[in-house]
Amino acid sequence: MPETETELMLKGYGLTTAEFFYRMPDYRHVLNSYIWQDYDLAPDYPQLFRFIEFWQKEIEGPLHSVRFTHRRLIGPAEWRHVTGEFRLQ
Image (spheres, rainbow, N blue to C red):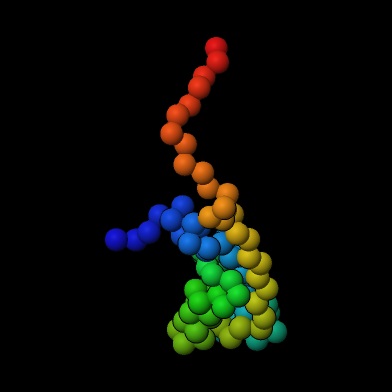
């Protein structure tokens, strides 16, 4: 069963966004871009490198460059269990 986004974030995953610049197969002088996002672990970025390997094996357009950023959205110390809630009306 796949883990939820919250479970991934509590395990240290963050949102990684990458912009791939690649050459068109028939027009090598033309660069195109593709945006990719997934939850990944810094500093090794296994999901990102798995996608780059997939691209190199399966996609005809050769990669020119990859630009990426990583942001942890929540950490274990930032998550608190709430047992009650008070509403003032």
